[in-house]
Image 1 (cartoon, rainbow, N blue to C red):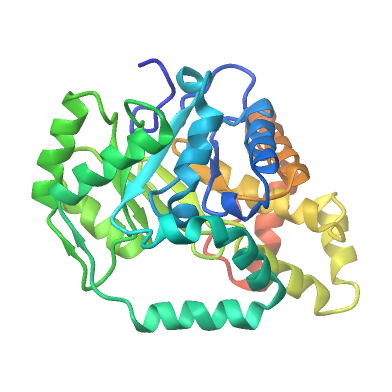
Image 2 (image 1 turned 30 degrees about the horizontal axis):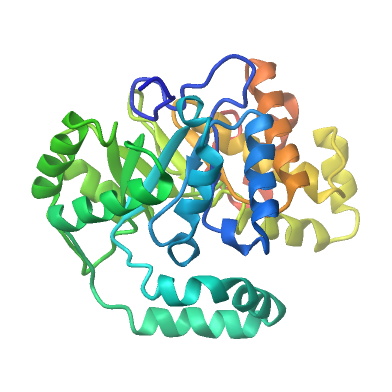
Length: 332
């Protein structure tokens, strides 16, 4: 197995000339209405230098792994794949063919989408993460992905009230690693439960958590973290702040040396902030638009070429910290 891997010995290990540290998240992959569009999106990410792809058994009602598997054919040794277990896609076989129209309907009616999320939260039942469930889920994932191993196998979004036998899982994961079915394992989800569980693990584990410029996850030397959700709420909060007072955009633009009237410029800085803070690990991004793939990869490449913290990023952090109360140190 020669594909890149995520771990404590160097984070995203990519070849020369690629967007180091940037991975593509497939949570929303099946929102694209056609297979041709989905494959084009994945192909664009690959051509722009992305070599890590993150998926889960439940993404796309269970259909996202197979879609990524189609893309991985002929490329498997040049990419790394992470998948997750613990959340049942439930009804994927019956609903998979209907998800395109369903997602289109929800996109047109945000209030309906929010109501469904509230309902799902209200009826959430504690999940059990154990060795038997992990092995069964992995076998399904390997079949769907069309591969005999995954680079990282995550416990998916454990939370308060869930049953997680870390010792049992650790022993099972070591067996799977020795069998060549996984290369590393860890916890992916909200920061507090994942951090607490990782601290209880005897072996080295990969930690993948939600964070952004306003609530950065603390990292330690030798313990790299993969960040996700860095753009989800931070970008909207900064955009609202810039629009809140006449002349504020112009002031930011003058100090940062970039056009802060362009949402793409702010998105690039938010992404670069996360990439810089997680240089030993990585950052996931997700989009359904090809042009945004190009923009994200360009931001990552520019940061790597800078060889340090660019002045625009430094000034951005100073403004965010001073005006919006970010916990990120302005001088980092």
